[in-house]
Length: 440
Image 1 (spheres, rainbow, N blue to C red):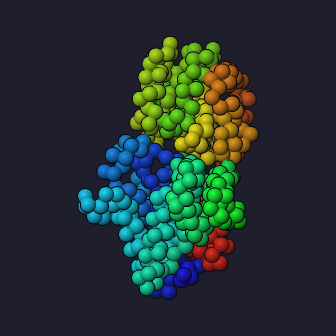
Image 2: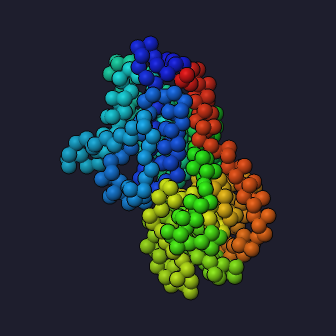
Image 3: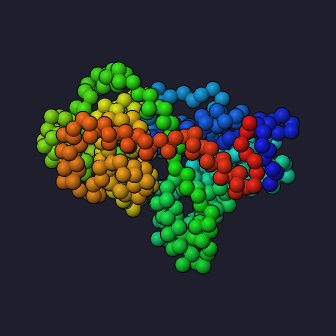
């Protein structure tokens, strides 16, 4: 592989490039926001060509993924280009047309002579696309100067590696783990995620005699999700009042859930806990987000005695989110482990901790403990009674204690600032590849 130089341009004056392969906006996912944050820092650090390679909007519209309203997505900074490659082939290609389009575009980017750092978020299919693109690029005989970072998130393990290991589908598990470990820098979003990857790899190794688990132990580093702390630290009280007024809400007059609406998020437990909280009898429960459980949860809420005090918001934009967090009496994310998903970090929790407002109430499912440290009110999973008790404490908490708790939470959350995460990633990549990667 060609050496990446320690300057923003190579000897021919070509710019340094960062490519991020991800499910980007408008997908509702913390890691689409992470990709945006890493791209923004790359510009600040001297990268002159920053690209996010993602999926066409028409495919996303039919995918079933929860999406933000397009007009509510904040624009990227000048210098960040979002590419949505068109599919390759026609109806005779039964599957993989869009993946082929993404891979083909990556081959073009990898062979144009520009030194490139390529980061993929989600192993399947993004790291698989990068791996195949690199194989094809090198086979052309053209100069290829690419260093790769592959970030594993929760759904990679639960949806692919762990499920394939449990089902005995060796080929699929081997494909994902091989692509992951062939990256220059494989990272996981939490210690919990790394442990989960290793335990799943151990299942594969036990059945087939492969060496994946030990390689994961040795090579996988931890890189917590990159968050733009400035978006939340700079919340102005007068703007919060305006946002809440438009939503017919008042400061400390509501309990907030803001995340994807899926079974693993525990919203059903939150609704039951809200009903059981005596301190919340005059408050509103705001459930903000979208996802596969949206209709079921709306129907569930409609059957309760508090139906008129439970509101669903599926159109919260990037500008509104920090204000809704800052104005709530409590923020509740009672995540619970499910076969299809385990919370491997908890980006929304950190964002809330940065924004201020009432206490965070959550569980220690998966990597949540790493996200919140000792700054949140912890409840057992699947325990509406415990949620009700925690809400009673949170809503009636004295102002001084509430402020002290919010300040400790904010201090803990600052470690996940996007600039720190980006710089640490490049430093680890340089150490791993023995290349100088930081542009001037």
